[in-house]
Image (cartoon, rainbow, N blue to C red; front, top):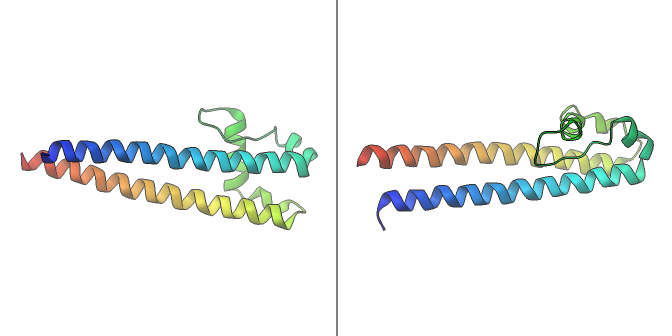
Amino acid sequence: MDPEKAVGLLALGWLVGAFALISVSIRRGRELAESLATRHPETYEALGRPRPGYFHSVRRTRFASFVARREFEKLPDPALVARFEAHRRSEARLLLSLLLSLGGVALLVVAVRHAL
């Protein structure tokens, strides 16, 4: 297999893997939002029913803000707070790893392009 095809397959694999990882992260976030709705319905409603998703929406933005600003730390539920903190850290690691790996794939594309 020539280098261009190999790098193309690598880039395609990266896209599929990134989408899968993001999908898992969104699913876990939705489970957290459901837990918040079940355990603290008044807080959930007051926040505008936050929920992560694939497409831009007010609910998705509100969930991201709730997690990023650590608003979950105000909840009187240590177990749920710990789950939100684990999710926040997981999302940060995912974003960092996706950005770094994308940089690596981009460097390979540039290297193969200039080698030809």
